[in-house]
Length: 287
Image (cartoon, rainbow, N blue to C red):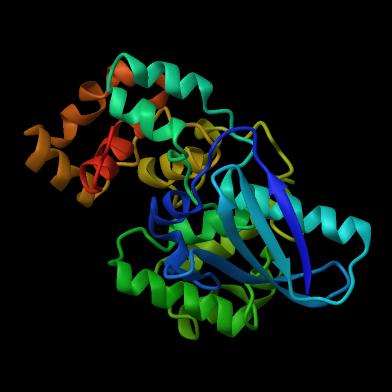
């Protein structure tokens, strides 16, 4: 077992990052809430598969455990970079804290204490596919679709765009049972790869990716594009779905067409204004 400590410049909560949304419930993640430990398998460039576990000894450090006897230096660096992506360790929260200070001090304090981040997948492509699997699907169906992708294509790991492309639309529809998403994922996996938006492993190549590009993709609507940009740390749009509409109607007494205007004061942090206020309302908050 190889262990490594990762230090942070500011407090970051593993618990709040993992539980901020549902990604940890989707394969191949395992979230041990009792021990505050996050884990999943990853494939090295050599093809070897290792299990990575992340725990948190204190608010400004993480303990990384890799189930391997030895690793090359580059392999260690790549795995640490992957973990940093999971937990958004490189996101600078200072501007969000300042914005929240005058709008909702609870949100500002929550971010200061380590909240405000959202678990991300190992690659942009994985986030992309999982987002598509949430469209017009209840959560149980999303979980089943992602599990099928992992088990039937990735053999226990999340599949790469190349693996999805090679399986093709009919396999995605008939075996993975993705429904209309089979065509969307088959076509867009090819498009993202051919246009060099992602590499063969699904890592983002084009760091200038923006909302306008995503919204032009066939099968990607406002919700999906907004959700993907949120996972790229662009919080200027709220991914509005039926759950967001229901919540805003019950708690703020506003209709769907009024949501964006209601949170306009948050500017580039609209999503944080909506989501973190909601999270705080559902935890035992202490000043």
